[in-house]
Length: 636
Image 1 (cartoon, rainbow, N blue to C red):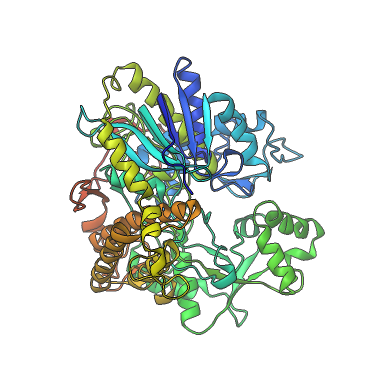
Image 2 (image 1 turned 90 degrees about the vertical axis):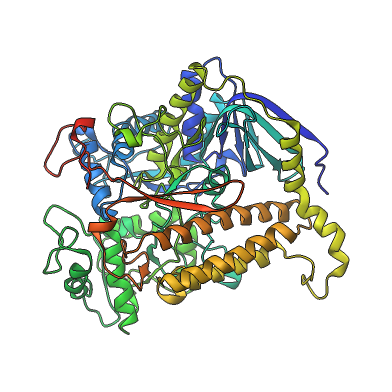
């Protein structure tokens, strides 16, 4: 049973919540600029194998190669903007892109093996933005730098709430949480907090069920804490409707990027036909010529946005011409490409290789199936969910800048990786870079005296303590009322709550069961059902042990994240990303009214949402190779 009478308290300067690539970058950079500062990392798992790259990666997906004359930051902004149907924070994207190469070079210096082109000596490219690595130990290598930078790393500490300063309104003062092994109550009083926690998997019902329920695409332990912590503290959020659906190898969720880009494989329908182009003419009328020309072909200098490829995939299957196959039988005749194909999975998605072996699928002789995943909510991969953050002073428009780079609308509260909204296609290296940028700004915030005079009353700490451990007390009081198995009239357990959440998000907010379709009526029903679930959580979630207590708080963060997703999806009255989700009542993309960013805030006291449109500035012109300046902003 929990020893939650034991309180562990730290008074520090920089608290890093989450030790994925964003958190490790933050700790590393905080030490460089804050040599006299006390820096602590709080990580739910273990820093050596935590975050989205815990299993390893076969490629670093964000590298400019500027020193080799390959790409520049402006190129990357244009690419990400096109892929996201125009919706990105170009100041944040450019800022990340102009610094990311240095982070990658550091990884190599620390011992990460990066493959090189034998002829040119440059990094081996998988695609325009991807470089290939031997990345099974990617995370332990990067974690070592963070461990050497921090004063202390608390592994196995789940942060549940942010503390707020009692002296100054809307200023962060630290965080609280508990040790998932001992149950100890941790109180972090801190001048700044950098949230580098993960986005949200498992808020939608996954395709894998039963014994395969843990097999999802994004890290299953990513419970939306990057959003739940920020939302509950009153930080403004942006683009929470921009969830992502992935085309992946069926059931194992193996990635397809290396196959498309390096092995030059392609897809076909169940009849052996090319199918994408037949869906593009009608789709171009839906989204407009800017994103797909009238004959259904992509513009010569622009790739087809990922969501539009999904659209063709989904509609072809729904038309009865599935399944969709990845044609591997041609590429795998080359022994070198066959080896790369298997290494791609053995380096980061072992389950896919095991599944093929278990189901007698040899991709050299049989083309494997693809499928589209359930939706995920994250800000560091190819979508832009996250907090509304300040950009850098030198290029951000006035509306995008309020003092410190990557600071949320809560003073002293910064974000990195999944936590930052509007910066898609950052991936692992970009998240690490954002952590560095946030940490540099956080140290400056402290040096400027903005973190002085913070006061955290004992009543706030005690209130959070009671809330955190209440599920254990609820179980202790009502455990004798169990009627059968785990059924109890007085409470729900975390698994029951998660099942309810996944079902309602799937059916009412555009999951796989409804082919990603939703509308005004469904979304409002979803909000009602989610409200009832939130009430049941607050009034009677029970945990029989510390492990279930962890699951209970993960569920809480998923509920908060899901509410933001529904609110944003309801607010954006168009279908901006067909192939990720559809507003059946508003099927067309509407640039006239919705070429804007969406911003929300949940009132911490009342739980009420306010939503607004924020101006979308294009700082990089299509043919302009110069760096952006504030003078060049132009409202869409």
